Image 1 (cartoon, rainbow, N blue to C red):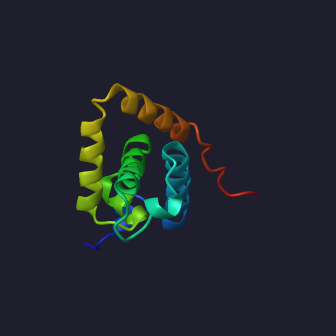
Image 2: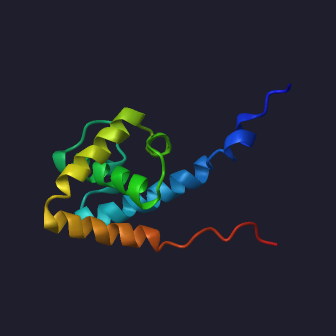
Length: 122
């Protein structure tokens, strides 16, 4: 019996370069929607409360709108999986506010309508 490559068992690993570009798109969208600088959303150091909330929204949107597992979202944002999980739970709890819920629905729709990759060009 030979061991199979894990990539053969579970499909190809995510394209980390493409993931980072996708996260840059989501971060830019959230920056526009929240009036927070994108650099504050992706900052590795503590930011303002508004910047932290915008980062949590971006993490949440990547998880929900793209159906990415938390581990993939965390890697793409350069965060720990538990941090991504906390962000998702926090935003889920805040969706009880009808205004925020509607805002997040609009952002999710924007992300889902983004074009998919064309694939290799001939």
